[in-house]
Image (tube, rainbow, N blue to C red):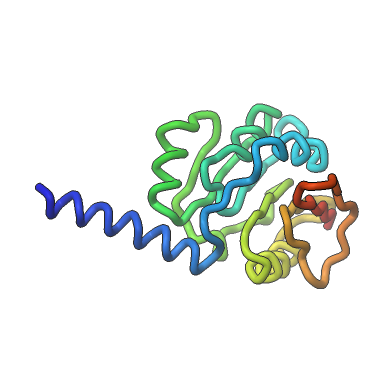
Length: 163
C-alpha cells in the first residue's frame, strides 16, 4: 500500500515539475487581482475564454461567472484534478496548450514565465481572430504593443493586447 501511495505522489510531483519547467511553477494570480482582470478583459456573455496554466481555476471561474464559455488548460495533474473536482462552472483540459487551437477564442489569459508569454504571444497572434484579446499578468509580451496596462501600486501589472 505504501508503495502505491509513494508511486502516486511521485507522479503528482513529477507532473508539477514538468509543468513548472515547461510553462511556470504554480504561483496563483492574487485573489484581489481577479476583479482587475475582469475589468480589463471586458468579457461578454458567450465569449470563448481560455486560461493557459489555470492553476487553481480562479480566473476561468470568474470568466464563467461573467457568462463566458470558459476553459482552463493545465499540465500539472494535481492542479487539473483540483479544478476537475472543485471548480464545476468551467471545463478544465489536461493538455499541452502550445499545440491547442485558438482560432475561435475571444479572450486568453496567461500568467506564465516571461519566456513562455513571448512564445505564446507569437502563437496567439498568428491564430486568434482580429479583435480578440490577450491578458497577461506580471510580464508583457515582447514584440506586441499592449492596448493598455492596468497599473496599481503594490500589485503586478495586467497587460491587455487587442489583436
